[in-house]
Length: 253
Image (tube, rainbow, N blue to C red; front, side, top):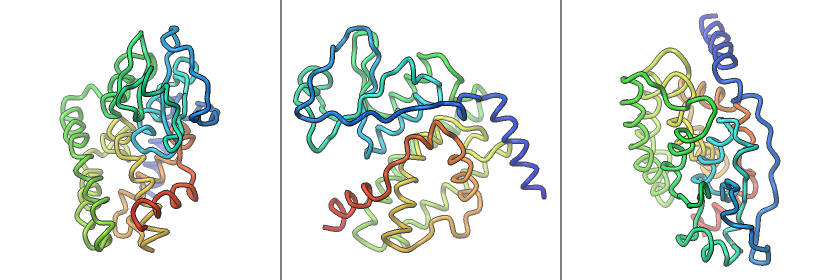
């Protein structure tokens, strides 16, 4: 009963404080390829270049959605397996995603982009003002690359055994604040930094390694459940079969 009351109260707060998290709508345009015509670059349009399979790009996409910026930031998906040459030549010399074309310049790196989007566009703030939460949030964002690299490196060994401590770290972190189910209580950039990777990791462990990463981790269970109620994230979720096919080619070949 206590858990039910907590979630109900949290749901009310989420609707009240972050209405755009649940009211966004989006359409997935087809990915551009090597035969796609160049866009009218630097014409004043703000564009977010992504790849539907890429968890780094998904971070920026989620942030755009949860800020309610679908009409402000145009989504431009790129097929990284058959990318247009003009993307590297005219847009982003590093030739990867995500990148953001804004105010006559192009910015990259997913963690930088989610911060930039939150700070430079309208919409609900995705990082709290509370000093304790900001400090812990920065700590968690700094840890995310360590977390993901550790998980990925386990795929050639014993993933279940090798990753137990990494998932326990997240379970403990989710207990830091008690005013909501997310890392900082309310949904924030910290959750965005992790959610696209955990989406894929959970899928791989379930389908490939036949293991449930949430077993014995009730806070992680709740975190995943609550994240999946947020339209701004749900609309970005990777295609299961397409991702598993790509994973097998990359890691299990």
